[in-house]
Image 1: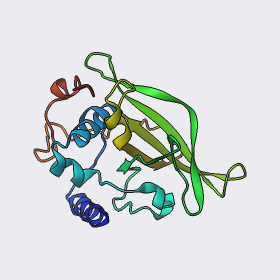
Image 2: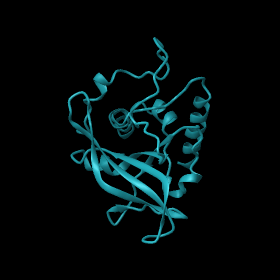
Image 3: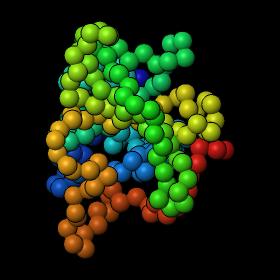
Image 4: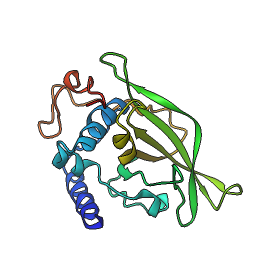
Amino acid sequence: MQNDSHTQLNNMDAIATLPGFRFYPTEEELVSFYLHHKLRGTRLEEIDTLIPLLDIYQYNPWDLPLGLESEQWFFFSQREARGGRPSRLTSEGYWKATGSPGDVYSSHNGSVIGRKRTMVFYVGRAPNGTKTPWKMNEYLPPPNSQPQLSQELSLCRIYKNSRSLRAFDRRPPPPPDVVNPIFHHESLENENDHSFHV
């Protein structure tokens, strides 16, 4: 599994060298396309190249193999629960959930397609940890999905908090009349109505 992760990260580094490449998926695309296909084992060659599988809790956030210079980084992570809750401890700190989980909605039909939990990284051990600017959004299938799917994987977006007003779902405007034929996947008109039912 570790070798597969290194291979995926090397592939991502290779793609990142392509001129003008940017990876700015929206939350809807992360759930309805990337997480959806990863859990079903479909389109893995494309998806694994862009979002590697990694045990992120084996790393402090600044030690993660981030590779591509970006404002945000994406990983799939196995959800291994201890006593019904995943362990979020690292060697030097821990990830702490903030607030209540929120829903991710389809722009196609307004249905709930996933759940999002936000976490902040603290150095030290609870309850005396020191808050850092590192944050993570963890994306999961919706609560009504098959139990085995909701326990398998999550999709994590890791970033450093800043005072920038740039919204996560706002992408840099593409050059006029330019479409990248390599990374332009099929229209979300067909993808967004995917649910996690079988």
